[in-house]
Image 1 (tube, rainbow, N blue to C red):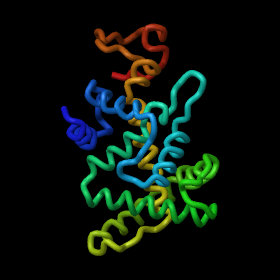
Image 2 (cartoon, rainbow, N blue to C red):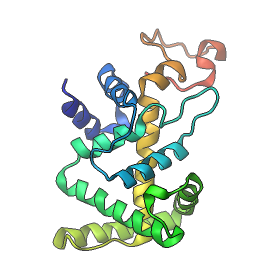
Image 3 (cartoon, rainbow, N blue to C red):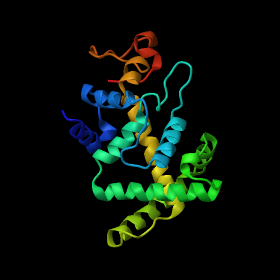
Image 4 (cartoon, rainbow, N blue to C red):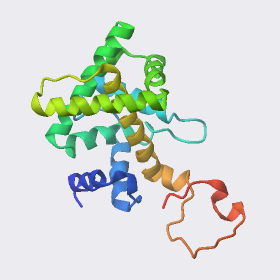
Length: 213
């Protein structure tokens, strides 16, 4: 299967996908890239994406983080090769808002941002209450309706920041769990699952780990 078609299949239902060999191969191809040269977003936006992805799932002494398995590169490729033009434009709008917010908060461009600065913005938006998140969703709905009629329409800053960051967070978690390196070496991996047994000791059931297949 070609890379573009594989990405399209992911986009049709990413939340329900099984980590098939084709998809893990795609993620592995992103892991092997020695330097991140964004295909869809700018270099400065790529710096921001990489920092956010790393903050969502950082590495430690035993488990590789999201950046280690190429999640940031995969997300950029997904946006570049899968999203329809209208949705690509919305991602661009989101990053424009991100850049403006970062500049007004820290008096610098995204490409000069430090991890603690991105962490501050992530905490500001991703730790909001359910009521606030619902309000953000309503504001984004109003923006989408306005954008259909006028492509120059701009979203509410806070709503757009929450929308972009939560989207990146969700894609990061899914992509990390689906990657070959995590699926086979960190999660409970059994390429040929056996019969269903309703009562097993933890030692025979992955020691509490999530099953990767």
